[in-house]
Length: 133
Image (cartoon, rainbow, N blue to C red; front, side):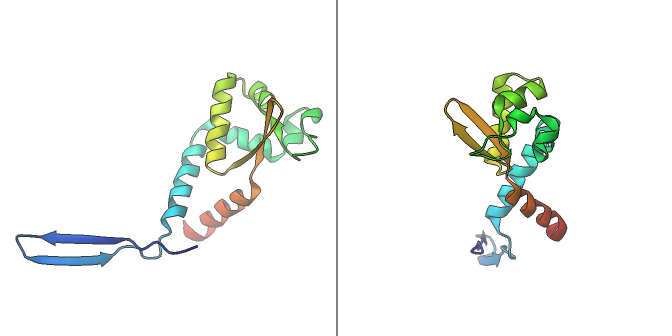
């Protein structure tokens, strides 16, 4: 990924001085923003719990809901809603927040939407914690 170059331009008419400072210092601003979105998504206890359930769906959902052949590990919104005890709209909103953050993958089959964890993103998040924080 390309390095974003950010420059801060300071000027003072009183001092008749212009200074340009490179503030990028190898910061990848896109990744930083992605991680901010991820942390916001994880800041809700129920969303965090949903992510935990989807780690091992066979332990947390009925076996019939875990075997969708075209999307292994995907769980229907209705099953997640039932387990969470939330309204359909709140459940869908929570799942959409996690999907936009890259934590979940979604696939629609007919009128049903299935969600599963995005393991690639979760591995990147673990690496970020290990190497950057």
